[in-house]
Image (cartoon, rainbow, N blue to C red):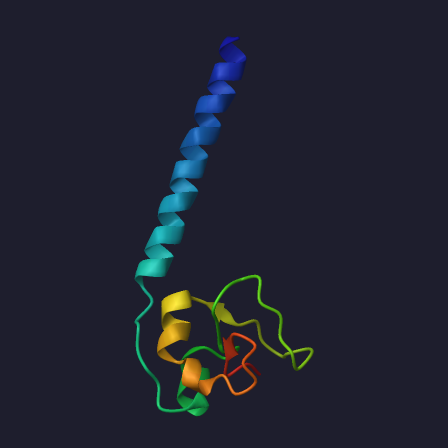
Length: 89
């Protein structure tokens, strides 16, 4: 019983720590509207995806897109094929 409680407490602590890392990473994103895909690709080489579940209509890409819904929404004018990934390469 003590061993199970210790493992459970350890798991909770690790998960809490991992969640704080993800929040810090998300906080460093600068929400900005870019003029064109050249500017987007300087900062995000794979483009900007709205969600992690979206699939690229154009097939294989060279880079993995950065996933951020708010950033995508600001730059969705650059999503020419309307696959929810702006400026993918």
